[in-house]
Length: 325
Ligand code: C5P
Image (cartoon, rainbow, N blue to C red; front, side, top):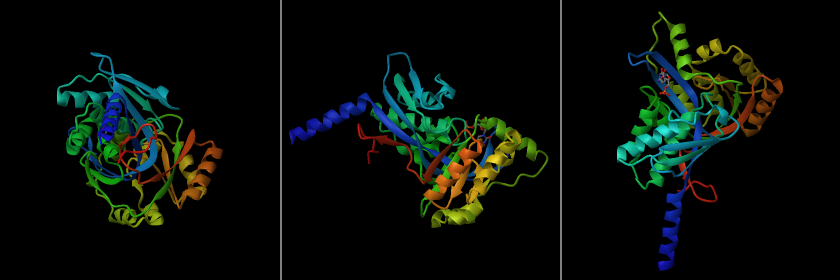
């Protein structure tokens, strides 16, 4: 018996020395956008689906008085800010502030989610760092408090913690989990350069200026398609109100969308503010064919294939790297 207890203590000790969290990217099956609010945000009906493309956030104790110290690796890491503006640093500071402790932590981001691509990569790092620091510091902050801190960091951050599928209302941060009855297969075409989310919302305001923008609402047909795991029905219902703005700012995306559709995708759309474009396919084999055609066309920088729904932020066991249940 005592051997078991010692073993558990050793594991606890390891957990406190280093915590690794895996966090998924998201695609928006529907992004319905209302008019600009007085606070500068827009009311949304945002149907999120987490997909199996992940960043990993690893935290360990840092030097006293230094605050969060961030490092990042991965193909797009040069574009990731390593200062206090990084959502992972802001998450550590927010959590430490709430508990009255010092945010002295080393945060390493192994970045696999495209940067500034509309797939919530920055939000994933915020949610991942929050969960990782909560575990490292042994705080056991209740889930609804973690979600509230996420909402303070950004509109998409709560969903990165939750994962699966959810309807986001308000500015996207008020979540209702959605049932999903199957696996959906996607290809993502990553563009050469990112698009700024505020810039795309501004363009949406310019394009809709002087018109009545209807209150955003989730489409019943889309929710039914998710629930039934029906890819052809989901393809018909996919919608992104920011797509026109993204295409106005980046007209070349139209060619990428057309290439994926010609290669057999069931549907093609910009992911949220873009410029990553998303293609829903019938199955995994179809996804690889579409990805190949997109790469061969030269209309994107790279492609990624992923399926959803995927689980939300999860602490990984060391060293196997599987989520701890
Ligand atoms: O919440 P987050 O920091 O991700 O938002 C980034 C920017 O995107 C906001 O400053 C705002 O310009 C725009 N935005 C918006 N309406 C939303 C979400 C984001 O206008 N619901």
